[in-house]
Image (tube, rainbow, N blue to C red; front, side, top):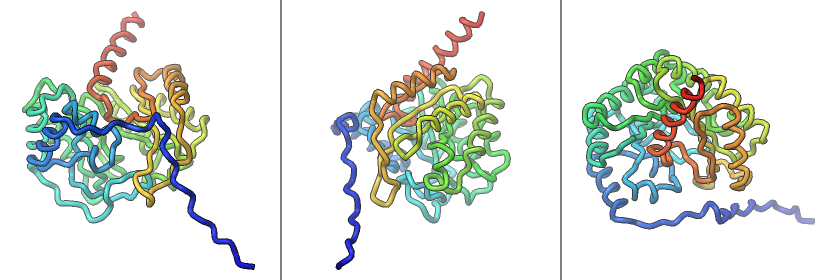
Length: 305
């Protein structure tokens, strides 16, 4: 008898709540042209974000520093892995120029992992914050940094530049790290967030989590507890979407009602703000969320009187 050869599972079809409208508006085209003219990379494009059309049409793009090639190979991420690009010392100036031209109220700046650099790129983040402050003093700045693992003093360098929000994503539950986030450490990421909070008490800290990778609800609860123990202010939770067949599979599509339940649970845990929905991403509606963060802190302070 011939042996039956197993066939590959059919790709999971996205449910209706994950289908987005794609429209190339004049504002989107202008944002794209500006990024090209200034030779700036964006995580919106490199990570194949489903919200790109919406955000760019609102003239909001998340700049990705330090090239388009990452030194890590996380199973969820669409950014290329390989030999990294050279560091461009003029990049902070061009980021500041883009922020000024777009007249942004709030900007999010992230980067690839740069394990090849002595400080992991922390000094470049600081230079970018300083350049934006000089060119657009009314713009608030949010950084989404890599973990800077094995780079002593890197977190302190970024925090000393006083970003308004220090974001670092834990991404998934600790049980899945070896498969989803190899090279990273859950405990190290928690410690990074705690150090950032200690060094910028007037700022906000933020972290994000993907669901649909095979985590259990009680594991999500424990991550929330760990993040609150690190004094994280703002939590984002979104659906993992597989960028390509070579990336980790989607274990399941989490229904909107479950995201609402996560949000209610996070509020009970004491987060100042939570954004939890299938299409939530770290920088999705970040400008509006920053205003909500400030309002939530003020309200909590008044309630404590």
